Amino acid sequence: MKEIIKTLLYEWKQRELPEVKERQLSLIPYASGEPKKIIVVSGFRRVGKTYLLFHLAKQLLKNLSREEVMYLNFEDERIPLRTEFLTELIPSIYETMEKEPKYLLLDEIHVIPNWSKWLRRIYDTTKMRIFISGSASKLSEKEIPTELRGRYLELRLFPLSCDEFLRFKGMTFDLRTVTYVKEEQAKMLKALQEYLTYGGLPEIVLSQEQKREIAHSYYQTVVSRDIVERYHILNEVTLKAALLLLLNSKEYSITRLYQNLKSAHYAIGKATLQNYLHYVENSHFMFSVPIFSYKVKDQLQYPRKVYVIDNVFLTTLSTKQAVGESRLYENAVAVALKKKHEVSYWKEQQEVDFVIKEKNTVMALIQVCVDVSDSETKKREVTALLKASKELKCTNLIVVTRDYEGKEHAEWFGKKGTIQFIPLWKYLLENS
Image (cartoon, rainbow, N blue to C red; front, side, top):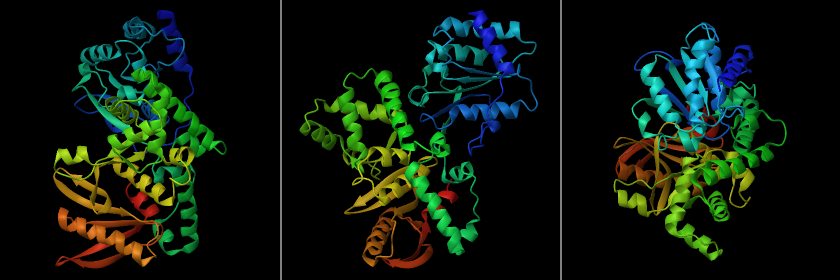
C-alpha cells in the first residue's frame, strides 16, 4: 500500500499539468480565509471539475511547492478500493515529503469505502485545506454523508456559459458593436447557433468533429454509471424509455408519464417512476421546474416543466419535431437561470416561462419568444406577462428574443410599466 502511495506522490512531483482555460467559477477565493470548509465541487459529468482542481493547483504552485499542494485521482486503477489506502495516505505523505501538505485536491474520492469518515477525521485533526470533486450522484448536496454536514461547502459547476463558450472558441465581441453593427451581429448569431446546437460541455466545444458521438457517449455513461449502477436499477429499459419521453416533452406529470409508459407496454409502478425521476435529477442530467404557487399542494399537483443540463442532448437525442428553435432558446435560458436563482413558471390559461423569486418576493418575469415580428405572437406573449405581473405584483418584465431589442411601454389594469425585449445572446452574456 505504501509503495503505491509513494509512486503516486513521486509521479505528482514530476507531472506537468495540462493547459487550463479559466472558468467563471474559481476555487481561489476558497483557498484561504475562515471558516475553513471542505470544498465540494459537484456537477454533471465532463463539465470540467477536474480541470477546475488543476486550475487551483497551478495558481497555488506559483507560491508553494508540489509537496505543499497534493493532487490525487482515485480512479487510478493502481489505487485499491479499500479504506486502508486512505488510512495509510497521510502517514505516507509525511514519511515521503519534506514539507507538510497545506492543500489536498482529491478527485473521485467517493469510490473508496468510508471516504467521508476519513475526510472528517483529516478535516478535524489537521490544518489542511481540502478540495474534492467527483460524480454528481455521489457528491450532490442531497447525497453528502451526514458526518460531513456543517463541514463542507458545495460549489456546483455547470457547462460553459455563453461567455465561456466564446472565450473557449477564441471569439471576442464588443457588446455595443454587436448591437449596432449588422456584420458583427451576424457573427454573434452564428456563434450563438453553434452554442444552442452543440451546447457548452468543454470537450464537445473544443472538438472539431464527432460532437454528437461524444454527446451520445456521455449520455450512455451517465445512464449506466450515475443512475443504473448507482441506484441498482434492474429495469434499465423502462428507465431509458422514460428518459426518451422526457427528452421529447416540455413538461411532465407522474400520472401522464406513467400512463404513456403503460400504453407502450412498459411495466413500472408510480412510486418506482417517481424514484427514477429523482435519480435522474440527482445525476444533474435534467432538472424540473414547478408551477409558481405559495401552496405546496399546487406545486405537487400541477405538471413540472423539464429542462436538460445541456442543449447538445436535446439536439442529439430528441426528435426533430420535439426540438425546435424555441425549445433550444428556452432550455438555454433555463440553465443560465438555474445557476443563480430559484425558478418556477406561471400558468393561468396563459403561461409565463420563468418566475424568478427571492425569498417571498417575485423579482422578474421572463418570457422566451424567438420571433416577435408577428403581431399576434407578440400580443400573446406580452398579455401573459401583463396578467402575471398583476397577480404577482412584479413590474420587471422581460421578453428574450432572437434579435429584437428595445423597451416598450405598456399599461395594464391601471398601471403603467415597461417591457424589456432583449436578444438571447445579450441576455446570456449579461447573466453568465
